[in-house]
Length: 359
Image (cartoon, rainbow, N blue to C red; front, side, top):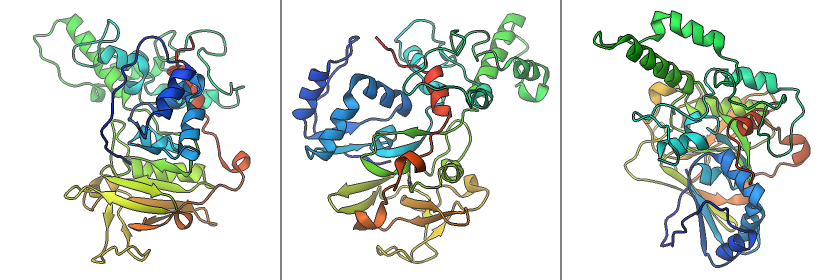
């Protein structure tokens, strides 16, 4: 993911959100704006609600500030990104429980404020075709809480029953456990399994730079799906966009009309070369991820950046990004955003399950 380091001051947030004027003054007196990782959709929705998005755009495009970040902090500057924002462990309530923001968290880290579980895809299908708010939804269409019923919006009861009755889904437990302890442990095992079934989604971002960005491109997260493989699938759903995959230990640096690719020496990544040294030309590559079984070959190359597009035959084409070059040769602007930028319907589901405070 793109990253940068600098000497900076730290501003501690309080319960009350900052005013527009406070944010404006802070940005105006800053030279570098570094955005951390986290839940991308939640962050961008919060920025738009507070008006911070317009301040960040102005800082980048008009005030010549240095903008940088990793993970969600890299996605935010592009048209959109390949995001794990539907991972329940990144939800606001889950993070508050994990880090002591509210009572009720489990000592073992299991237990989230909102459990989407295996019902995420089912919920996404049900959301299709429904009227959508342009910005935020905090309740279901019937006015009930998104977490009513069994905590999954009522969609997973059959799957809960299947889990309990299927021995293959259950791990052996010590015989010394009481029946109540075993039941509680089974519930946590079930919840843990459910948490790992979340899908990646395309999150719309600030559009300061063109492209659909995938950070941690060479990594596999808790849902068990290699991001590089899922990113190819996302490209097919968004065929008019330019895809940019940045390995975990790589960075894409844009300076005026020029770009550079950096990586951490000694770390592994997804780029291999068939014995050809990458001298900055496009002839360099062999992709390690255009075949099935990507999880078996991850981490056997060096960190790098990949450029992707969907050709006229509907196939995803990938090439290694040169080490340096001109931005105009690398990034292409989407010609008609209203037509060509396809909205991921699951973004609205993400807002329902992990709403921002509106006060």
